Image (spheres, rainbow, N blue to C red):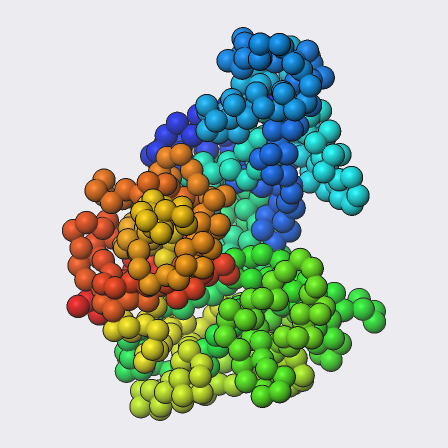
Length: 604
């Protein structure tokens, strides 16, 4: 497929706010896609080169994109008024003057993508008309991989060269990808829906596609496998999905989608719902999926967060952990918790997250040691264990893991008694933990927040106000501030919840309960997420529309005194006295509290 065809399809999708329309247009794109290109396309339409677990960043700012466009213009006769870009009175063509003209154009359009489209369209370039997706992808990958001394100038040179080969529409899309602002407003579920539509003309295969994806969280690989089978088995849905499930299997080095907790109010509710449970402490740490592989004397380690990001560099202890285990290859689920060397006390989540850095990791690891509380094994020496009952996985885990300086076999109890479960929960709270997690005794490992296999309660937490739990909410936009808050650039923000169907519904406007530093941090986190219009997935009442919309990427943990019914918020609920507890950089929007979970919370 020519890259121009892809660009035009994406710009067509941009015109629509209807998720159904987006799904249909993406389905058309898949139907015109060669399976060999599907992996590249799946990543490019998400504005990335590779999936989160194998991320490759461009490290190019908007300012650098402006400089690349200036280099392009200077090498091709300068700018003219034809494209709406005017030169100054003296016709200066040096880089500084040209860059000022490009910045002026950007201020007019408010969009670097549209600016690039105008500049490229204004220049007389010998464009390569048959430039295909793999060629553009290779050029983008080369730009992203440049490193070392002089890398920024080399990136600019390569980007300017790529612009010289692109048509205006392609230049617009490439620019948005490079600066991380493609954001067309569709989610992973929209992509899965569109694949199903491409094969069947309806969403009938989406559920199975989602279940298969959760084993190996790489939608590009899934799209390529699915489209290939679509060619081999047209019109044979059952055979196609069966073969896909057989061939698209769990793979070492590619994360599974993490299992997440549902919420119930009491131990009695849990036992009534689940009968027999394995109860474990709920640590205030960072969820880490550990992939270990032994190659001779060397141990290869990968570690992934719950949002599928590779954080292996954050934990230099892990290779040492692997040397003590009697395994060749394994995948574990764990909680990484920082601890105080002198007292042995576990540290809160915020301190553990200070390990997350690009430089000085080794020094920080000495200052802030980590313990990995390992509570599950999902794969062992070639055997997929996710469909093995939890009770059996616990027995397997006990044979492998022994307590070391860095690792601990997470303790647990087995019970059918609500009184014992309640006492266990209270014991964890008194120990300074977040309570306990109850897991159905013989459950399989079920990714996401599906069914009632994992349940948590966090009663009696002081930060939760009168609600029995905090809520993880998606930041949808912000409102301009007045007075002192004007200096922060914002005075309040709007939060919402996913509805499980790809939409986000508002639940609260939050303008109190933040320190000055938290307001500044919110502004900093918001800047790269700002979009000109409300994302298509947002459902917000007109009377509370924020001044600035944000793409659905930032998750905040919010405490409140009460949750009440609301006619203003589209979720049907509102919060009384909401306040920010912390930012959840380790969570993706689809892992936020959803509308089904809200139903489990007591209404004031």
